[in-house]
Length: 433
Length: 77
Image 1 (tube, chains in turn red, green):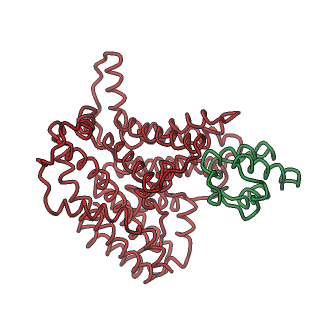
Image 2 (image 1 turned 180 degrees about the vertical axis):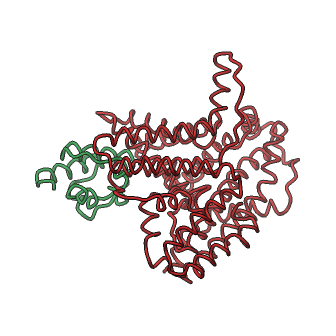
Image 3 (image 1 turned 135 degrees about the vertical axis):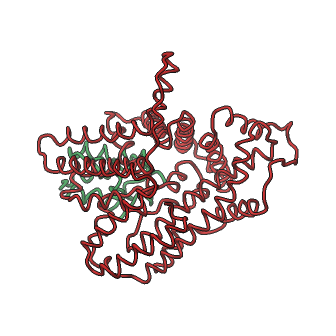
């Protein structure tokens, strides 16, 4: 069940909303149990077997969280075991075949692939869980219970694709008695945000995907223009797809009086890669900074610029790999690490300020270039598209891939919306005032 | 609670890291007020504060200490 499916929008969501505010009106305990139950049904609708995996990870991590909070001597050991458990759990389902393929290639082995289906949401749940465990270790969480923890992990608006939230941010809102009553202003804002998300996802991203899919499928035959159209098209597609989904998540959460943190802030208006990561997938960026970049940086006695850049590269390779089990994602992450290093080095060693529009142009195109590796099926396809984009002998205005009018309109709208309009975060702030 | 000597040392370290005069740094200063206060400068500030006060700052708190006030509040508590 996805947010834009009619079964979710016209059946599941209204029923949960009705029970939450009318049947269990002001009975916040029942409301919480309802949200937990609804979240498991939401997940089980995709795959009932895997909902047991989510339940397992909730039970195991709750156990470790409580141990970490209560333990005086073994806090660190419990944290270490719990974090390892989560990484191994994710590795088994997401990376095992990638590891086996590489081992087979490196050592000429013939180990059979497991072909395990990947449980939806596990990547987000893993990061959110690690943040919870570290917060328990650092004393940011001094008590919890299974109901609160299960709700924090499973809350259906942000279970599948984030944003990555911190325990205190969510629990304070779930515990607030004012949030158990219907709030018409939140419903009004929530419905507007859900509509914006739907438009972004269904009208823009899905229409652009029509020619992007064709472009990536016929990557060997692309002309110069087609190469650029495919690459830029995917850049807009992924942004409108993901930010549209996040808008819907934000709007749905708001119906239940829960504010989710902003995850995007007009990323294509960024004037450099540092700026880009402060605007794109903000909650992932914060997680990587707080829970990987800072601890790794602090582990150096004398943190120099070079060491800090090395840490940046490691963090972004991890980030790349987190997106998927493939060397293409590693390259995607490494390109972003490299972009950040160049940006940091420029700031440190050059005092000439680049023109804002030129900086935006450079950043947007670099991000767009990196996304070719994100989307391509293999390196050969990625390099074919890059070749088409750079091969001036193929500079012809012929466009062989068919671009329906809807797709072309969606592409133009995407361009205008990204560079000339305010974003959803701005709209939410305006409506809240 | 850091003593006056430590407070002066912290302000001086921050001014050096941000390449800004110490007079520009006060209790109302926030990360977004300084163009050089990025993630690298931030971690350098945290390491400097830890060294001066000999107080360990947990990783999960580092991101929240994005203003002079937040840093001193953390040290007081």
